[in-house]
Image 1 (cartoon, rainbow, N blue to C red):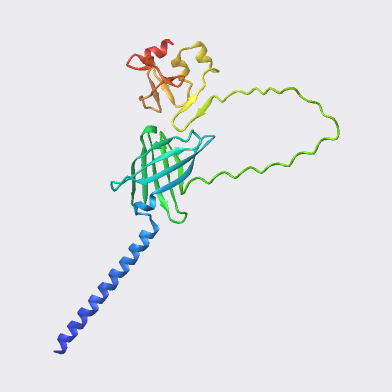
Image 2 (image 1 turned 60 degrees about the vertical axis):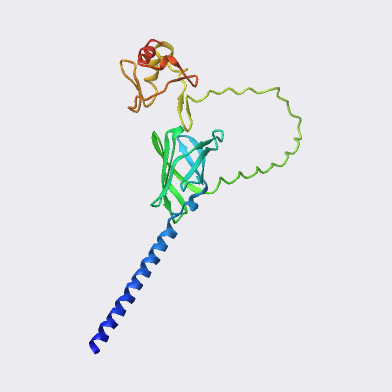
Length: 245
């Protein structure tokens, strides 16, 4: 009988140790969930960040909401480019990663949660990758300008100038979030050669001897004239058209 009691006592100790181990695992899991916003309701809301495209700084806002079907949806707003809401697709939150696609811009975002800073640190991809950190909330409103004190009237009489004309030249390169435009009016090739010759001087653009155009090796290129598609540059003969114009 003494040996049976000893066996039962060992069984109780084993059960106690197993329960203690399960409690420790539950505590670790709770800490991991606290460090990563895994619940969908924690990503729902407004997020904001800044894209730096060469000399241009673009403020973007991301709005995430529940789509009512157990998933997520949302839109992106470029505050410095008209403020148009662009719909998102494939909005996902899994494993500490927040991802979405922007089909109209052929762009995407993949960010990892930074628990120390409370933001999403990732890459915005649109042909090239740009760093983008999304912080919680909308962009804070700009602070009102402090009015300057009125200048004292000069002691001596001043001469009135009738008018001042300031003349400046626009930049040859204009960068937007979905395109990069080049002004060819100052290009000698544009005045003496063909359109194909002028395009060969555009960075990242290649034009072969048949007039076929590619951008960074991608032949899927749309050529716009004054910002609009032209039927001249559609179809298999567009290379010949570029060489003749």
